[in-house]
Length: 171
Ligand code: CUA
Image: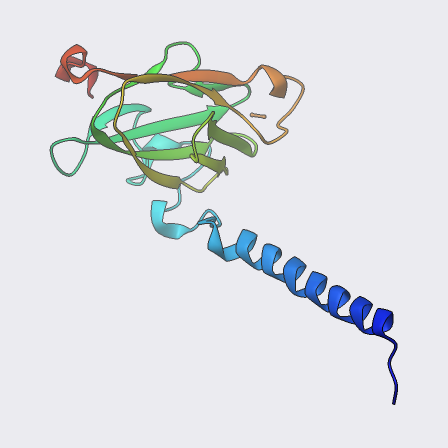
């Protein structure tokens, strides 16, 4: 059977595009480090989140070893506690595990300009562990539509020089 040269060219190009598209979707799903909010952070009663062992009074805590901190963040319409009325403060050169939950509807928790980005789901604690090397200031935004004040739901995260961070800021 004779296949015209242009016909063959189109076949190859179409096949290459299909492979490319499947490749990009696969990379987006599994290759880029994305994951669903899973069970590792545990579950809580959304009406009384701090009553659970999986979630503490929102704030910054000493972690499992020196230089590690646990930050508990409650997202609710339309603020982050802590984060909105006062910035979350952590020292530079630290490892920080964020534990994020919502006490009303689904919110987002994104640290602008970084790859820290998770959903805040009522009843579920999302955990994200990251390292902060340099002092810097970041914005926090909610990126899930959560109601009429969604666009106002923001906060800030200050990574301060270690010398400016004292244990009195830790719960
Ligand atoms: Cu909270 Cu959008």
